[in-house]
Image 1 (cartoon, rainbow, N blue to C red):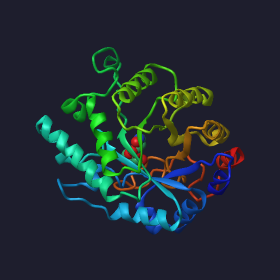
Image 2 (image 1 turned 60 degrees about the vertical axis):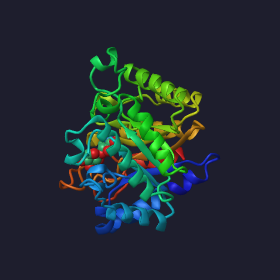
Image 3 (image 1 turned 90 degrees about the horizontal axis):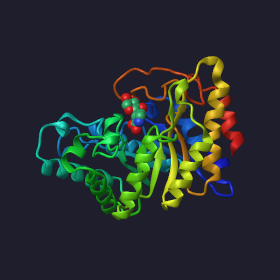
Image 4 (image 1 turned 30 degrees about the vertical axis):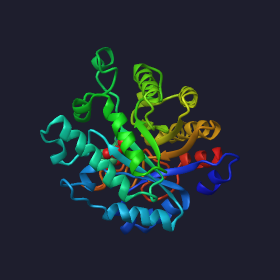
Amino acid sequence: MRDLAAVLPRPIRMGTALAAGPLLTDSAYRRTAGEEFSMFTPENDFKPQFVQPRRGVFAFAEGDTLVDFAEANRMKVHGHTLVWFEALPAWMRAEMTHEQRRRVMVEHIRAVAGHFRGKVAEWDVVNEPMSDEDEDYVNGNRGVRPQLWFEAMGEQYIDIAFHAAREADPHAVLYLNEYGVEEDGPRWDALYALLIRLKERGVPIDGVGFQDHEYAVGDRTDPEVFRRKVRALAGLGLKARVSEADVLVDEDEEDIQARQLAGKLAVCGEEPNCTSFSTWGFTDKYGSTADLRHYPPSPGNALPWDATYEVKPAYWALRDVL
Ligand code: XIL
């Protein structure tokens, strides 16, 4: 797929999520990843809980393994993620003053984006800033999730994070990544309003990643609605990407999976500000959200390759779009 995507009139990158573990132990995983994709997102290995297990103690071995793999295979790395309310080491969640909390966030960004400067092309600077609670859309939060970073700094935690990331690696393309915003509704409206505020305040944000997980029948979204979101971002001077697509289906629904994934890829290929299309993993051997650092694999049926690395209809549908 990567070669077809590279010779489109407007080339895009084909991506996936990868983990250092199977890259080292599973040759079919390694081969398929290198042959089919031109970009990847470290699934867990760059998350704060693994990268800074204790304050000031950084663990970059897995991350460096991934970066080496990218260099050997001419792939871009999309870093994930500098600031999130999950995947935090316990010490980062501990009680501290607002000022200490701000310092911890900025130091983490500086150290991690600094370590990977020149090796990681893009970052998810802030992951999942929008709330899941209806009440946060009607009160003063304006839909922004009230988590630990927000509690310490208010919405400005997003501004501070993007400024710190830009400073740490001036050439990296900086994204905000979110789920459930592929569709119309209050979540999208609140995100769009947030983006306008960020732009007005001069926050150095370059784009938005649409996770696009489709775990259940109710999650199936319309590519044409997604197209409008991508165009709305273009109107703000922002890039878009599909960052974590997967479509969980029953065995007799592989055509639905193929249609959903191909529909989003087609939109991305057609909209000039859409830069890449990534699935969240590629083989059902490890599932799309199996925890490759802590738990045994939990196969599902959400990805273009089955658990034995046979391609499914989704693979051919994606190729057909390219
Ligand atoms: C998931 C990983 O896939 C799992 O292995 C891990 O146990 C939990 O995190 N949105 C994100 C990703 O931004 O970081 C999440 O990844 C999936 C949802």
